[in-house]
Image 1: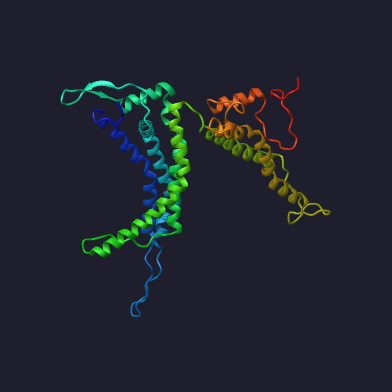
Image 2: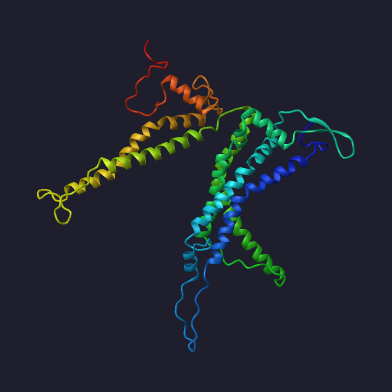
Length: 369
């Protein structure tokens, strides 16, 4: 019996789908709310003072006072407000993700468990497909509790990018003052207001959707990999780990070298100059060394984190239907950790890091007997 059978109780899944849809749109609504608050904060244009009534002394603006008090409505705290909306949207997305995950697997027609016999309100025997909780329990049995959050990372990034995009567009293309439609407006005036507001919202929605769509596709495909147990879209994790290790390693090494190994002491010559033969030489040398330290450390650390980049690139094309990602060119890897272990055994974790002097590794099939 298919999922569209009228005898199958749809209410068990309707609530989950609705909650998931509400969570997915939280980021977009957050960006729109931020723009409305920004328009409300803008002060009205100054009017010419009447000649008989001189203009009073300048008072601190509401925006300045609001900023000093640290309120969310201040102009200086606009990035804070936007970050708050992104964080709230991320929280709602994470909480609702298992609902969306189960709904997506049902949408693609994956029914791993047989229907069960039950009775409806009329006492008739009907077949019931697994409810959300039964389906989620099955996912936990297969992938563990963390399996309920498969595909969450790209979904969070997609929603955050959509929210930030909408907020940025409101700053670059600020909307005109939106007039509320009232019962005093005639048909033509009210329709004009609605068309104007909807056109502006349509522009922002389309742009944010196009920019965030690749991440949305990755998130959907990460989740449906549960059906065939593939690992085509697991290359994101090693890429993220490589970036994190690179940033921390590069910045910490550069800091310790600049703080403890670079000698920037100068002589007691007035003006901070060095010796008489070469004034200021020590000071200028220290600045020069510091300016190049982070650059040199970046090159060194990038070599150490290269395996993360390699594994991420291989997982992006592994078992994707292209010949380069299938045997005999490449094994089919179960996960990026499997890929890492395979390359490590073969001595290929740094394959491609050097393009000029390429040496055959001991574990390669081209190695000499």
